[in-house]
Image: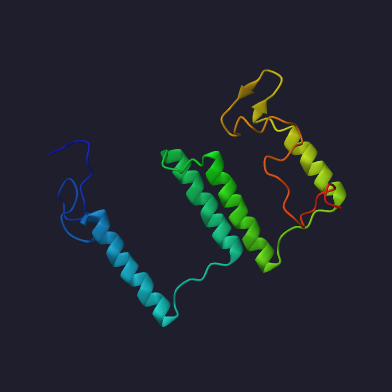
Length: 151
């Protein structure tokens, strides 16, 4: 008998060769998926509200980072994700509209970002080399956007 393994209910050491837990991960996933679909059809599935969904996402993100399996966004992917989120928020009417004071402060904070040490010329890889101008946008202003240059 292996001394480092605990005995199961059946008195044997090691893992049981029966049941859901002994199935390979793909088979478990397929069965769980069927259960989820059935619950939705019956109307008994849990529906997450936005706060529960955020909490679950945060928890999953923490676990993925701890395991080293989290996706690391490159700068272009991060910009695309931000644009997609911003567009969705504007379509829903939930996007924050900055007044000129808030916009000025946000621009100032962005220019002071610790992600790039401009005084030493170091780049930690979070920003493309072309975004070295303090307070300058990496993209040209869009027509109709809130810009003092367009008004």
